[in-house]
Image 1 (cartoon, rainbow, N blue to C red):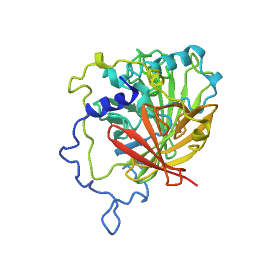
Image 2 (cartoon, rainbow, N blue to C red):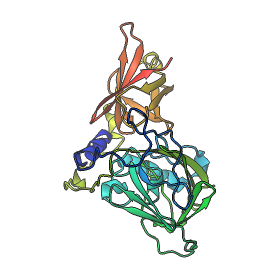
Image 3 (cartoon, rainbow, N blue to C red):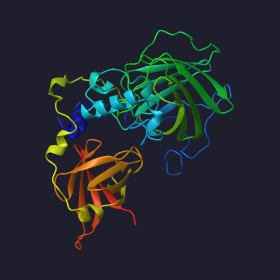
Image 4 (cartoon, helix red, strand yellow):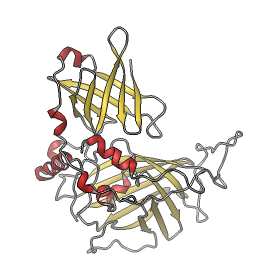
Length: 357
């Protein structure tokens, strides 16, 4: 199975987007004179005066869902952990939690753009906040003053307690088992992992999240990543049941390096002509446009989408390449031979990116 087939498997295993309440107006939200939700309105408050985080939210994590360690230096990750990431990439991510129908654990905080993880529903009470995910998992964040367990029984979703720091919800989590990955690339963690999340509802339609991760057995220092979410209005959370259609993993075969076997040589001057920044055009894959940076080193072209990290692209022809996180890339040239656009090729269609001047 090629990397592109992984994406196809995820899409084919998704349910059709037809269900009750998919277009049901959200009651009680501010609207513009035209009737559209006013996402720039002030953030609401709960009866106890705290910011109300309740609602259905679309997670947006272009960078960190793929590579949680994108901002770390190579020496910040233990060599054994970096080798494990490379092994998981070579095996096409066949042991990723979604492929095994297992919870994402700490990965829910930063994951997005993936079936079963892109949306969440927050239900807020004064003493307890629930976060519901589309794959039927949930988190409990206790606000009743209890202390975080010092010696917890490791679990998939861990244990979480929270408190308010003025208008910011601070969540401390601990007690995760070590069977989950922190991102799609496969960065590991141990049972020593601790997470601190800071949620701030900037306005009615935008939720900012800062996540600090600490696992001294794997990473040299704690580090922070920034994620955000947009309120999903006039709709409702739909369930997604992993492997509902019974697709089996025995067909998940091959290695990531197989793409290199069919690679062809392309002249360096042709590759150099593709270097540049390309921005996604409507229709977008997600809520905001993606950006692809194309660079060259020696005789190899590299692609980096949204800062996730550079990926070597294997040429299948002078204009077509594979290897962009399991996606294909095709450069479209003008009549004068200069590349003006590229297509990111996905099972759901080709997504057009124009070159920024």
